[in-house]
Length: 156
Ligand SMILES: [Zn+2]
Image (cartoon, rainbow, N blue to C red):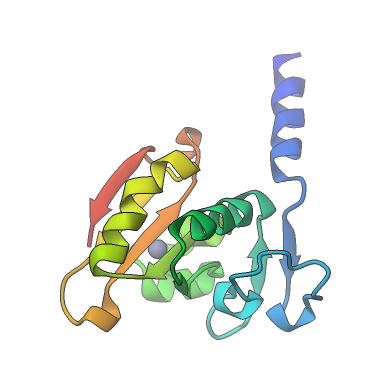
């Protein structure tokens, strides 16, 4: 009984997630997050994209509340791509479709940080050193139960 309920919950939680071999296969009807493009959320190199609507809705609501541009420098990553660019190997937050790196700095970064938790984000990584163009904030909404501490914040 408990197992069945767990399985059902797992299924429901993943309902609506859609995998694309390339962001180019996505039609305008499907893509409803007006301040973002499929391309900026796609895995660099292959162009593959895992869309998790629940996460995308949070990102869009955050963007609306912030009222400033949020350029995504990394969204979904295939396990192969993640292993190349992150010390989290083949299974980091970006491989779940529930993570984004936002190019942002200064006052805009502070404004973002002041509202992210209220918008449901649970993983906040802060990179605010070095050239301004390289500064970013990582956001994800991973749940507590997947082997990483959440809610959590860290610096790079
Ligand atoms: Zn990240």
